[in-house]
Each structure stands twice: as structure tokens, then as C-alpha cells.
Image 1 (cartoon, rainbow, N blue to C red):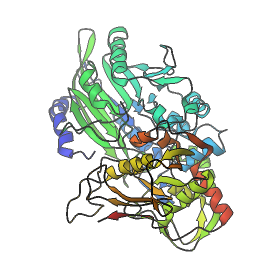
Image 2: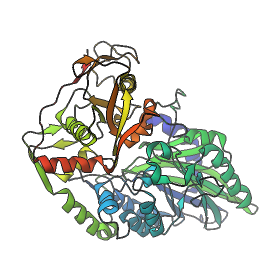
Image 3: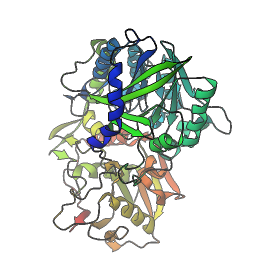
Image 4: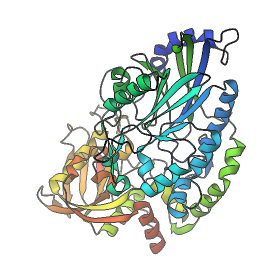
Length: 550
């Protein structure tokens, strides 16, 4: 969802003006009954430490090393500062992948960095489960701060798997930090990766635990770090499409849970400087360490309790002016060097340059490479893939592991289902929702529904079809054929896809109850690397089995 900056800032303007009376670090000079507490927040760091794009091998304004420099600066400004993260931390870069899958013996590099920066708490994200519970628990034990999730329970019990909350005393002010996890984990993950756990509805759990913080723990401030984002467009009230049940509930929590001061959001990879919903301040620090969120709370003592009188929030961009923190760079340099060595390994040769830049508008050889690997590895009739990275590129000449890592950025595994022609058509019709209603003179690129992630736009191979965006939703897939004949709705096909789709990820519910013919334990990325190493070269022309009309 694209948010208007004025809409973001106006609700907090009055709070900001009131806050001007509290500008000095606390306690305020001559006013020991007043105090300013700063809470800093990161989210969706996804293993980004060094300010580099590992896929392009170029510098980039991102990562915990740069964010760390901002954190240290703001701590000097106000010693009464807390630091939280809203999850999706130990997955997402080749650095974390190499550590978790190739050499998991050393401490997790993200935990090493976050320990050095003095994090107070982390709310568990769904991607923490990508490498299984053994890897998750190892990283958790290495953290010198608690991993929080008040809605993750040991299955069949009323015992939370993680610590639900943390209480920190800051210059006499009791601050409660509550953690919540998006409950969509079972939809997106292989069952063994969260065995023995269940994820409960977040609004009721937030209400329960905030009550504990306010009544039992007697906290003065409640901060929630949630691995969830905005579920609706606040201007229209329209629910954002493609969400699984309760995936994002930040607005509902703000509206329905009394006693909350600030919510640090995550999961949706959005930069949200400040929103005020029902008097609750919401902020979100984008993703990959591109921003740092900052909330300032201004309190005054009334009797024996502290009351929040004003609050404001903003996000600070990580730009060229921010120098990476040398301590974090030095601490994680061995991990970075090891990762670079792996990524630079040559595995094959390409006779032409391939790019995914136009993969959403036309058939491309670079996505056909993924299709080919899935079809062969799964001995399937048809295959479905999405473009995960529009910047993916394979240059003419040597192919490296880096090229394939940039093409397939997720840890998905291959699954082959037995589906009917009707189910395949339903999947393609669902995918076609990626485009809004047709408008004459507009291109397909102009008609993309920006609320739908690109990774939920699936393209098929093994069949031929036309995606006609002039047609109504549900009727856009035309001339669907298999081996030169119209595809019979009752015909059985072996369809190669990934575990995320099989579990219903992206709203692909038509696969529910489809028999599993084959399931690989190896990531699709590794299957592609193995295929290129065996064949030494790759096809450089697309099959052109589909097109967009008009």
C-alpha cells in the first residue's frame, strides 16, 4: 500500500507540537518529574549487515552496520533509549543462507551484531522458521536479548513457546514490550519447521497480555513490536488483497486493544514514518535496514505513576551520509568473506544476457530456466513460477552462484501436485488478478495492482495460454492448451510448484487437498545451481508459451 506522506504526518502533528516542551534528554533540567524516553526500531532486516547488494555485488544503502551507526548516535543524544526489532531477521541474504545451511557452527552473524548493538528485544517473524527449529533455537540461544511472541504457543497447551513480554525500567519508568507474530506461519512453512507450535489470533492475545502488563506488571508505557503491518488502506477502509487470515492486524490492535502507546510494525516491507490510530502511534522501519524507526515518548509524573503526555515518531533513512559502523563490519567480516567466496564460484556459461526486468509482461528465458529445472526435477507435466526479483540478471559469459541466488531469492522447496485442468486454470485466473481492470491506452505495466506482491504473480510452463486483461476477473485466461489441445477441466496433470504455494501462500487455495506426487527436501535454488553445473550452458531463448493481450 502506498501511503501519502501528509496523511502519515498530520495525525501526529499535535503530539509533535506538545513534545516541543520536552526536547532535552531526561530528566529535564529543573523538572525531575518529566522524562523523555526514546524507542528505536528495526524490522525485516533479513540478514542484511554489510551495506552491499550481494546479488549485484554493488554497494547499497542498507544493513545493520549503517543502522548501527544511527543507533549509537541516538543513544548518545538520549541515554534513556530502548531498541527493538520486529522480526524476519535470520533469513534473506546469501550471508545468512550460507551461515544457516553451509556452515552453521559459528554464532549467527545477526545475533552477533545485534548483541553488540545492545538490542532489548526481538519479535519473532515468520521467516525465522525458514531453516527449521534447530537453526532457530541456536540463534535464539545466542541472542543476549529475549525473542518475544505472545501468540505462539506450545501446541495443545496454554504455555507460550517464547517469552511473551519484557519489562524494562528506564530511569524509574516501567516500560512493557510485547511481541506478536503473524499467524500465517502454517500457511507458508513446511510443517516440520514449526512442529509442536500453534499461532493464535493476535488481537485477543494482545488484549490479554496488555492487560497483564498494565494491571499485574504496573507498567507506565506499553510498546508492541509486531511482525505484522497495516491490513487496510486507512483512507478507504479497503482491506489489502492477498492476505491470509489475520496476517496483518496492526490497525485492529490499535483500535481494539486499550492501553497501547506505540506499535512498531513489520512484515509488509513498508516505510511508515508515523500514523495515529485511535490514539496509538504506529511506525515501521521499511526493510533490509534501509530505515530506522524512532518513537519519542514524553512523560510526566503524577503521584507515584508516570503518564504519557505526548509522543511522536519518524523514520530515518539510511543514505550516503550514514557511514557504516566499523565495529559491526569488523565483527562480521569473516562471514562476509566466506559468503563472497561461495557466491563467486563459476558454475556454467551463458551465450547471451538474460534479465527478469520484463518477466511480468512477457515470457523470458531467465524464468524459463526455473521452469525447466522444476519440470525435470519433478518429472512434471506443467510448472508454475513467479518472478521473485525484477533485477535478476545473468550476464553473457560465466554464470556464478551469485546469479542464481539473485534469480531465486527464497528458500522454497519443490513440490509436485496432481491437479486437474480446472485447478490449473483457477490458479492462472488467481494470478491474473495482478492486473487491474483494463483501460484503453494503458499498458500492462500501468495496470499492475500495486497492492499485490510480484511474487504472487505466477506464470505457467508446459501449457500455452493468453492472459487477456480486457476480460473480467475470472475470465482472463484464454486458449489454455496442453500438448496442442484445449486443456480438459477434468484432465489430470502433474504440476511442479513450491511449498509456499502448496500451503496456500499468496491465496492459491485451489491446491488444497491436491495429492502430493513428489516433495524435494532441497531448495529450488540449489536444484537450479546443480542443473547449470551439469549442463554447463543454459537456453537463451524463451519458449513463448504465453502472452498478454491486447
